[in-house]
Amino acid sequence: MATETIDPLLFEPASMPAQPELLVSAVLHLMSHYTANSQESRACTKLASVIERHLKALADLPELAPVLRATCQQLSEQWALVVERTMASTTQRQNRFFRLVTGSRAN
Image 1 (cartoon, one colour):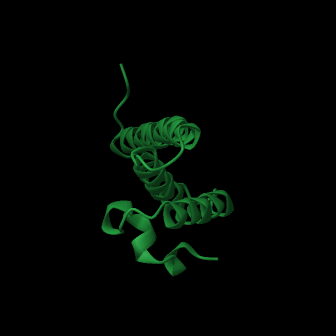
Image 2: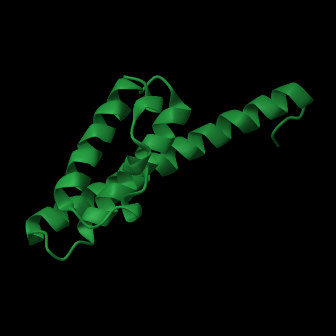
């Protein structure tokens, strides 16, 4: 399945009413796309960011059981680290490419 076929509402948890079942369904769907598209780093960074936001939205829902809220909070933090690492790695590659193209050397 291509990322373009995902319902745009899945990308913004705040745009939907607080429906835990829909958020859980959406985040599981997005996680499966993240795994399937792991070769495409740009798509994966965006998906990881959306997954993190969905998990954070779930963690903030007071009607969820405490254990589920805690799990979503922990997973949200872990996905945030995935996003940070991916973005840092992309920035490093871009900097190396820029130095290569411009002939600059790191000191």
